[in-house]
Image (tube, rainbow, N blue to C red; front, top):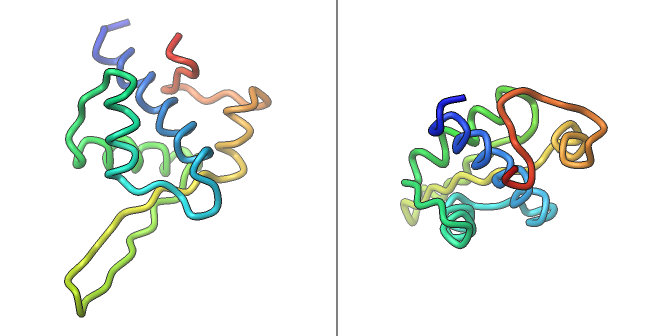
Length: 102
């Protein structure tokens, strides 16, 4: 496996775990970015959002865009889905994700 592909799989697994740890409120992209940096993965917010969209396409997270047009604020929040929890718990497997950085 190409090393960049492996890194992508690891990052997606980390994003899934971060989204679960965030609980009901979900995890904002800046929070995910900070948590990934702590794990040694420096990514742009746009790349993180692309990974979140990938996970959303697999049904593992739901990406919600929160907007406040008065203050011109827009935030993307990743919420884990029941299927995403199943993947983290090992009761379901999905290609393209490596859990635990393995």
